[in-house]
Amino acid sequence: MKLYKIRVTGDKENFNIEYEYSINFVDYIKIEYQGSEQEKYQKFLQELEQNGGMHPINVKVKMKTKFVDRAYLKNEIIKIKDVNDFINRL
Image 1 (cartoon, rainbow, N blue to C red):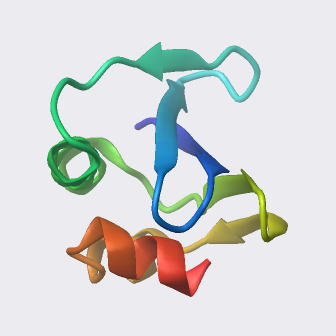
Image 2: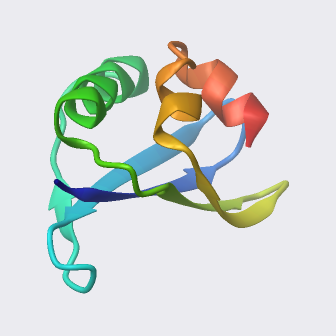
């Protein structure tokens, strides 16, 4: 079971999402996905479905228009298939 952390930077039209995981609650390892933000997000959703546990996903947003640091339930994130919808819901 892995714990996940997502970091979002940029703005609504030009954003970057970084994905990390941990297996020990302390050390996080960056996940290197290739492709567009949508392709990376789809790969993350697959990873989350296969390896995510019951723990919430930590989401840190440091965008030009908003700052958020909160946790989302795994099932809440998995339901959002489009990366732009995900960004809008933050």
